[in-house]
Image 1: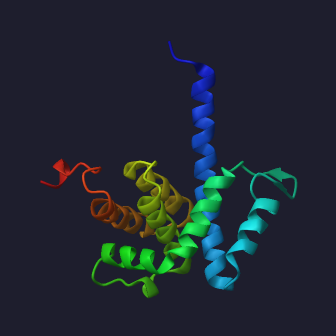
Image 2: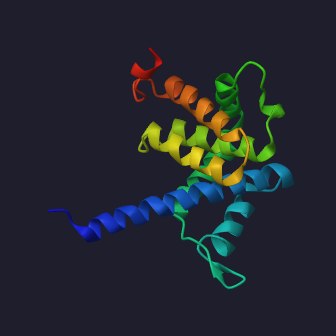
Length: 166
């Protein structure tokens, strides 16, 4: 028999991680456009954005530790992550050609794919494709999906089923 309380907790944990990913992409974007200090941006989000009310509207609660790991890890390893993302882009794209928010999304996704092996590659792909849908209205979502699929095959060979490629 399944435990409804455990299922609810698990669904709540997934929502908190999804929210943390969204905020992490926004924080990495903020770091790039403002060239701020990572610790200051993380503190700003922790103190004022993660689960707080804004203009009377409650924000979704985020997994604070997961958020912090994503932002700090992405900032600390951004050069390595850029190389990984660039290898996964098509030949006619470079990191510099990508819109800033798209670049932030791909960097955070690359960090999670590389450093958070506790999260299955398919989950990483689905989560960031969903964020692509939330943030963009054009073909960026397809680009995110293709880049993350290629990235997963490089970083985590064997986790992605290759049978559909035949």
